[in-house]
Image 1 (cartoon, rainbow, N blue to C red):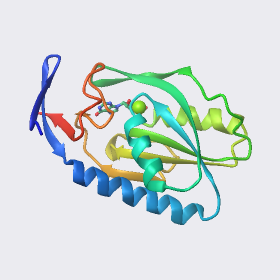
Image 2: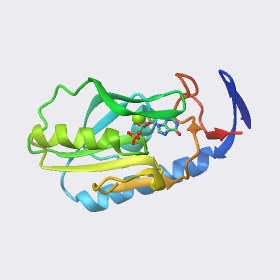
Image 3: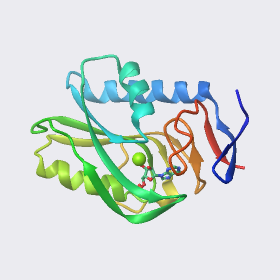
Image 4: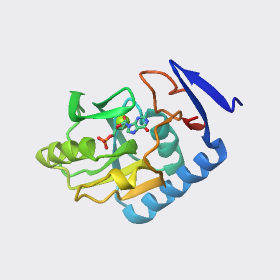
Length: 178
Ligand code: IMP
Ligand code: MG
């Protein structure tokens, strides 16, 4: 598998292997199972980046669950633009559901903070967050990130669903700016 990739004008090198990704996702699924017990989660997947992680997470979870999507965008190139647009939202009724927001990465927390407010309005019984990556030092919100796979620094990463201006989502490993 390629150790270096070029997307648009930038070069990226391997950061996290496929095997470490798989182990991380399995661990997260196990933690969710333990916490929820008999309760059935409603996974709310934040498009587009979380779609690859979500596909792996629900299969690792391997128990009955529900699934719907919301499309949020807060990024322009390699930096957060601060505001969060909800381009479309779920259609199912979330009242009384144990909702788990599924994210590829949480950075400032602007995206999940916006979603928390919307999910409270929608009457969710509980709201948790499962994010594959967490840029901990950049996060200054009150809500806990209930489940995160790996904590990373302030680097820009692509692959495993994450993109740089639309490219790189299909990469099986996670890459960082070279
Ligand atoms: P937040 O709203 O600042 O927490 O940002 C979350 C969103 O920013 C994520 O869902 C990603 O779409 C995007 N994002 C943050 N960091 C990165 C990165 O390193 N690579 C690609 N996208 C990122
Ligand atoms: Mg995202």
